[in-house]
Length: 511
Image 1: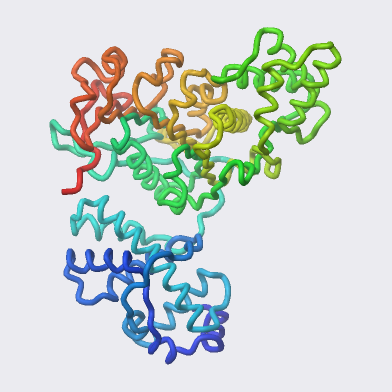
Image 2 (image 1 turned 90 degrees about the vertical axis):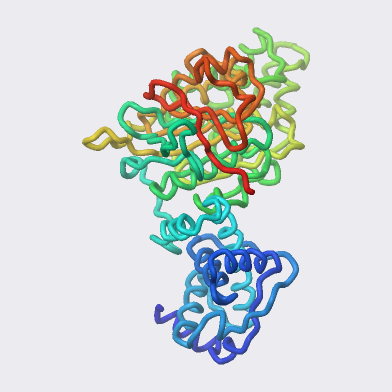
């Protein structure tokens, strides 16, 4: 315990008062604790409570205020133990909060929030490990190193090369051989990119979250995630990566999305053409040949006049250009007006600053599809430009490469088939720069609109049960693959470099 923590404890929180005070979580947390107590033969209710609090304290982010009906009471002397142990617990809560805890009531609130957050995390670990006692305790042991410490900033070089493999879900076993299956994204000759497909409820997002959590345990790589359904934010992914959540349009994305490396004529012209291509290939846009040329010209003008440049600056430049040529407003202007009804981006961070942190970008269901697609398009464009401006990431003597950034697009079928320049470049060319792209979609058919080599650049392809055209399935996984016949938690898996696809049990249904 630090001297400051000791003083604060002595001045603000009396240990005798804590010992006799009542602490409680919620009924749901109690249910989880009872399940652990019964499953593993724990002697007292305070044991799963201590596990929960310790696991929550490992997460450097503050817990959300706990909600739910109050649970059973555990006296402080039972919850925290002897006075010296109690003082240690209190100091840990103070250190985590970064502020004094000067009353028992304040401590009760802090304890409740950590207790509830940790209990829900324990529940997920129990589910992931299939109620297996040895696997459960092993998983908790794996989480112990670095407890409570915030992740260090990721260096531009990409940090240390990643030599570890990622298990394919909680089970990850070959159905035919029973052997474990894992993916080594940064091994020599491999591609780090991942595509996961499956129907509604198949477990594709759950599998991605599990694997990304394991990845985060071995590297401090930041994450940029696009969350169309709302099930990535405020969950394990947020906590594992220490991600900041941006919900558009309530909060604009704090990125200078149109930033240029330099302002010479060639750089401006190339940026203008790229933005034009990105916007005019999206579904729902209304641009003809002349309109495309006018948009490129207007974008060049805006990029030269405005630093930082916003979408509204491009819209204004396009309107001015139409007026100069005596043209009536048409679908092109209407499209830009639609995009500018919301403040989608605010140039707070440069790409270099933004992409060194972790972000989950929530794209609400009530946002127009065009707006959501534009956000993915412009952010991936900015990510591609930033990565390509850097030297290759570090490679060790054995050929293992370091990662710089992971980008995840859930519900990727919303943008697949549009041949977005940024996304296509990231899949094809970001490997040497330390980029890793995850695409979660519904079916192999979703990739039909991309060039033929799109999935060929992907190191790991997983397909759960779904109805897909036989041709696409056979081309990816071979003639034996029938996705509609897969059982719960099963998937066909193709790993780059292996001679044939495998049928893998990714996770087991709860019995």
